[in-house]
Length: 252
Length: 304
Ligand SMILES: Nc1ncnc2c1ncn2[C@@H]1O[C@H](COP(=O)(O)OP(=O)(O)OP(=O)(O)O)[C@@H](O)[C@H]1O
Ligand SMILES: [Mg+2]
Image (spheres, rainbow over the protein chains, first blue to last red):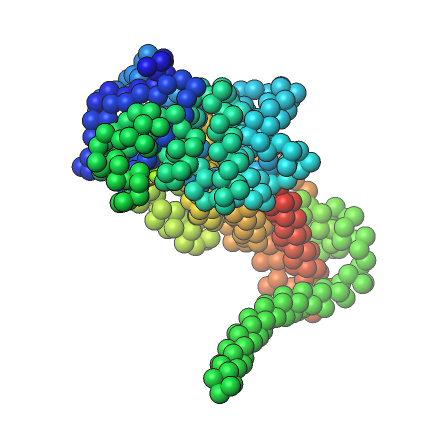
């Protein structure tokens, strides 16, 4: 294996008494796309949110084990969550642009980081929108409300917003699940582009999508990591019967 | 064919019902407008003779209000307009930041247990009669102000502002709180995931997203403050002169009407000029609402 930018060691997650993730140990390679697949409720989103501590917001949750990023456990006491989330960005299943202008949406992350230089912000906004393959569609209406964009455009805007603060890793939770095939294809092409600069972890219910965009695939089932490996191998030659059944659509 | 005819009948019935419901709402809306126009005309009709015989100049350029003077009767509204504006704006300066912070705290930060205690307290605050608040102004806030600022008594514009702030706070807090609670969690998640602190998220995302509701709450609170009579009558000292500052005793428009209406000859010029005050007050609240509408629309254009 190449360099692991992020990995978990015997990671457990609890919602109150409910044991949602059981002893997960896996790693993400830098500049690769790792897909998380598995039936609904198996813990994919929970796992994803554990990687940038977005689960902290949910009251009554608890973790055991380690998540190592840049050599340090992100659940250590002295870790600055704010700083962590700036380095590990997130795109949500339901696109959630702020009720602000397109420009302000992308600039938001820069603003809260204390960036006030107008030309730097403007440059970065253009760069991010270009990076998210949205620039040409919105460059003439940057001051219009983001909520007037189509669903697919909104999702790409959310990706641009995440790119603007130049994270190292981008977590995506079913980013294309609410989109039509064309918008989905755009997002997939985008992911392919993005992996040159970023490490991507993506949750998806779409087997073809996982096969198309990812380098590695992790199959989750009932809170456990069943199988993890090269995407090609997982889809063509899985070791376990359960994985095979799932990727071939025999259950799920 | 039979079937289609049957269907048509159902459709017609449904449309009829929709029509009736729509008419019902129209009538209700119309009724509100009629009442409003009625009040407007009443004030105008009652006040017009005074306006005509004394002239706008007397009302709006004369600085003195002294309708019972032996030498020269004066009908200048300026001092009480300024007093009303001062007391109201003073109240808003106190109540708006406090109200929004309080609402944000209750909606976004407080633990459920704390929230359960604070909410009813605020509701009780809203239900306290204005006489009681005025009483507090006389026996608590007044002496306190006098002590702190070394004035002879505390019955002044400042006192009125503080009390009106207290009275408009429940309105501002509860409506703002609803608006803040209504902001979808997704916005907050997006902000937090970008590395914003909780505080940044509150100030830059949650509150702006709730802004139209917050503005509405402020306008309602302000409406309450402008129109409040008993409290200011009791707590501001009622000197009918142009105030020089917040530590001067003032007499607002509402207080003037309440004090003098009973002492005047019905139908006399003094009596009628009190209706002119009422009319101007009406216009002022009208302007407040108009301005808030414009602000709201401008705001929604950006955020939508
Ligand atoms: N906030 C929460 N409180 C309590 N339990 C939760 C919470 N969120 C998720 N769970 C539970 O944790 C388990 C894993 O949920 P999670 O959302 O991670 O699944 P998922 O794999 O992302 O499913 P889907 O594919 O439907 O999005 C589920 O059993 C779910 O009911
Ligand atoms: Mg999920």
